[in-house]
Amino acid sequence: MRNVISDLHPVVSFLYFTFILAFSMYFTHPVTLAISLLGALAYLICLKGRKALSFCNKFMLPVIIIVSVMNPLFNHQGMTILTYLWDGNPLTLESIAYGIASGCMLITVICWFACFNMVITSDKIIYLFGRIIPATSLILSMTLRFVPRFKTQMLIIADAQKCVGRDISRGSVLKRAKHGLQIISIMVTWALENAIETADSMKSRGYGLSGRTAFSNFRFDKRDRLILCLISLCAGIIVVGAFLGGMKFRYYPAIESVPVNPLSLFLYLVYVTLCAAPVILNIREGRRWKALHSAI
Image (tube, rainbow, N blue to C red; front, side, top):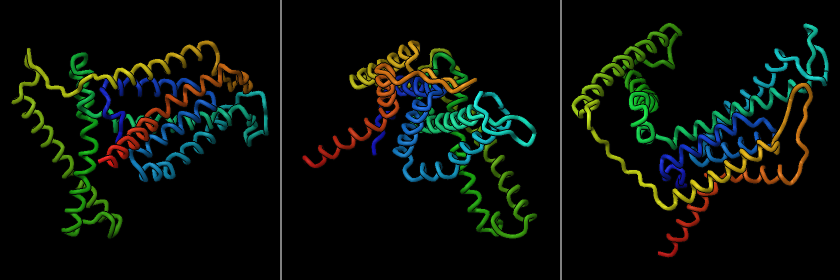
């Protein structure tokens, strides 16, 4: 499936993730947490497919369980006491609810950042911040690019070492540790050589010289303006609605929420639209592509 958000102008894509990450970290209402989490999972599945499901099974549930259990052990605030722990501290309903909410928030932010990393590539980061903070944007883009390259190179070296009998998955613990250290040593050497080559390449291309220009293939078209207006409108409605108390929720000292009213329902609908926008755009683009393909 085609990723529409990646095809948009970098300003639009970056602004969308800025809004969605800020809202995911600020709003603690269970409804907004569920909406943002489902939207992040749906978009991550669209981008990664089955790998996203494996990530959810191996990482998401354990994190939510650990955070949900750890918070009541160290946080004993709340008025609704369920029982008392072995050390005499109370176990409250509010601390359990806040722990579950914190775990969901953490997973939601991680999922959105995973989507951000796949959409906002290194060239887009340089385009966005190259003139404002050129050194920082360059370091950030090179770091994001280096991590997948390091992982790929490590797999290549591990396979090559396996062919000469240095398999890290077989043998005694001492031998596997020795083979693993050899692979790490090779990787460090490769990283240093790659850094020298990158520095020489940048110097030969005139990096840091005054008056140097940069090529950009990004164009702000009509579709970008339309989607930017829709994103800004949804974000503005959510901010104003939150300021009016439409999504207010409190865990301590007692769980208290704003009653369901037309304003809160409208804000939930707008928030669903904002979180599900990437998936909706992808589905719409996929149907449009199929219609054009069948018309040929």
